[in-house]
Structures are given as C-alpha cells and as structure tokens.
Amino acid sequence: MTTNELDRSLAGDVVTPSPHFTSSVMRAVWEEQASKPIPFPWTRAMPGIVALLISLGVCIGLLIRGMSAAPAVSISASYVGSAMFDGLPVYAINWVLVALLLTFLSVALSVRIRGVKA
Image (tube, rainbow, N blue to C red):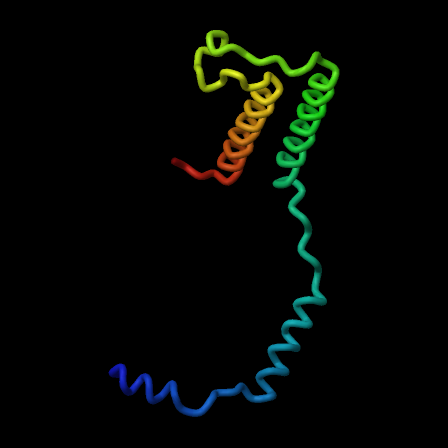
C-alpha cells in the first residue's frame, strides 16, 4: 500500500462502532468493576512507610535540636576542609546531609526491591 492509497483510505468516512459493540464493551467494563477489588500491596509499601517514619523522626529531632541550640554558628573553611562551606550555617549543612542520605537510601531501597541490576 502506498502513501497516497493510505491517505485516501484514512480520509474517507469516519468509522463508528456499532451500538452492539459499545454495549458489549460497557457490559464487560461493569462486570470487571463489580468483581473483587484489587488489594493494596502492603508488603511492598511497608519499607517506604517505615523509611518515611524514620526520616520524619530524624527531621523532627534535628529541628528540635537546632531550635534549642545557640544561634547559627558558621563553620570555618579549615574545619570542613573546603572553602565551599565557608560561612554556611551549621544547621544548613545538617539538612543537606540528611537530604542526601535519605535520597541515597530511598533510591537504594527502591532498586533493591525492584531487583534492577546495574
């Protein structure tokens, strides 16, 4: 079939399904919907829920510790070992490290559960 023949056949009348076809498809949809519902996969969701609760606890603990501590003290570049962190408040570095750690752990757990091999 050439492109011109295909264009001519597609440019023709609009194809509409018969009423019988539509009703049979809708009947099948309603029967499927009325069947037993799909259960939620709690066994697969539990590691994520546990990780969420642990990370929430760590974040709240860091927030409470940061609020009860003295005002933000800057870390000198010689202490950290890089001028990149010079003047950055201590609590900001903690949050960045917590975010990086949680990101790494969530990706590692997802890859482990899914069974993806590098």
